[in-house]
Image 1: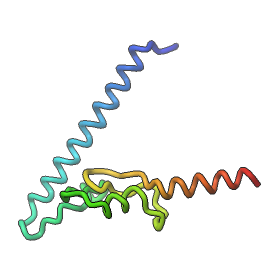
Image 2 (image 1 turned 90 degrees about the vertical axis):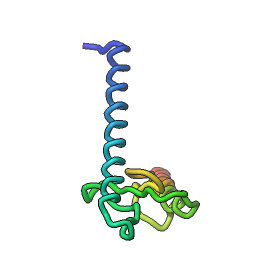
Image 3 (image 1 turned 135 degrees about the horizontal axis):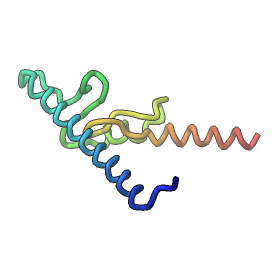
Length: 107
């Protein structure tokens, strides 16, 4: 049974809304986690529930952006965001893996 275009749009809208609500809830949890610490102990970085990384330090530095989005020294494809809750894509690692895959197909 084929889905109509409206049904597909509604499904996409629900998925985006769920993602937005999840990110908002994780951000609120991260802020609450930091505010529950004594003022001198707040680092504004950590993990929500021991799993999802967050970094709420402002301003974002070029060094943190580079470490999150272009870190050729790391084998990780996903790295903690430079600012916010969740993960970024390490484009240097993705480029390295893509290069390796392309070279393997040429052999």
